[in-house]
Length: 136
Image 1 (cartoon, rainbow, N blue to C red):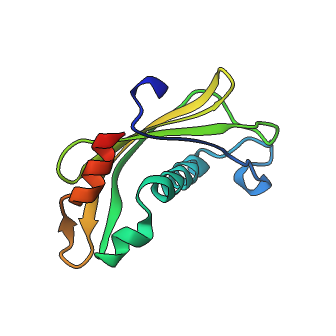
Image 2: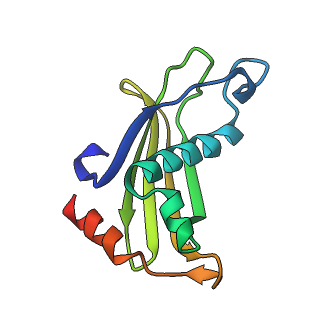
């Protein structure tokens, strides 16, 4: 994933007791929350949500695909990796991995749009944002 990065981020994921079942295995329903946390982290780094909301815009999620490879447990110390690419005037895609060393727990793919809340439809990314993206 790292060789093709533009908007890329890695950060630790804390596995909490409430993320797990009675056997200490992270529920599959928790992974979308981990993905959302990673997307919020990458937004904070490259394009803060507060800036988007000033223009009544926000990134919305259209698809999430998750491929579970092995179970996360309370003892796991995973790292989340996310790489976001722009693929059109308003469309974005994210590749996500949750790993620990060479061990891959899951892979994910998300598709979304840059969306205007007042017009209730996708809008073009701002010129300044696109220039920042191209300069990386």
